[in-house]
Amino acid sequence: GPKVLQIPSHQIIDMGQMVTLNCDPVSNHLYFYWYKQILGQQMEFLVNFYNGKVMEKSKLFKDQFSVERPDGSYFTLKIQPTALEDSAVYFCASSPRQGANSDYTFGSGTRLLVI
Amino acid sequence: QQKVQQSPESLIVPEGGMASLNCTSSDRNVDYFWWYRQHSGKSPKMLMSIFSNGEKEEGRFTVHLNKASLHTSLHIRDSQPSDSALYLCAASDRGSALGRLHFGAGTQLIVIP
Image (cartoon, one colour):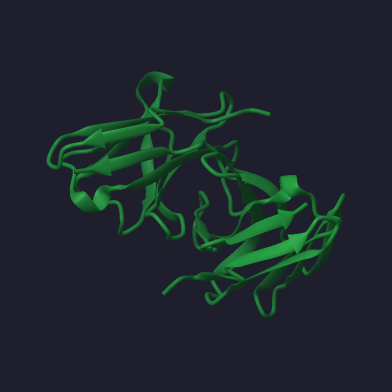
C-alpha cells in the first residue's frame, strides 16, 4: 500500500545543534502529523498541519520546534536548538481527509539521539 | 495521566490460540478507536477501526467497542507467529477538527510456535 517515508531513519546530534527530520507523505494526502515516542512510553501527538499552516499543537511542541512543507516537498520537523529530552522516535503520519475518523498512514520513524 | 490504557502489557499465546487485548479510555472526549500493529523497527500499520457500539470482524481479527464504558478489545483467533508484534490502541480526540490520536503504551504479543 501507499507509504510514508521518513529520512533519516537514525540521527545522532550534539545538544544545542539544529536537526531537521524529513517526511515524504502519501502523494494525495493533505493532512500531516508528527508524533513523538520516548523509549518505553506511548506515542504522543505533537502537531498537525494543513494547507501550509499548523492547525493544532500539543504542549510537547516547544518553541524550539517548527514544521513546514515548502512547495509540496518534504514535510519537515525542525528542532533548534536541540535538548537532551528531545531524544525520541519521531513518527510522521498523513491522512487524505480531516476529521476524527480519518485513516492515518504512519512512517517508520526517525530515531533521534541528542548527546 | 494517560488518556488510553492498554492491558495486558505483554501476552504470550501458543500458535493457534486466541489472543485478547484490552483498551480503555479515561477521557470521555475521545470518540473513535483504532488498533495498530507495529513490528519492531517498522511503522504502525492500521489493523482495524471501530466507530460505533458492537463488534466488527475481519478475517481472524474481531474488535468490540462499548462506547458507554469507552472500552474496546481486539481478539485474534488462530494466532500465528507472524502476529507477534506490539499492538497499539488509539482513540481520536473529539475536540480536534483535523484529528489527533491518543495512543496507549501497547500490548506486546508473542505467539509461540
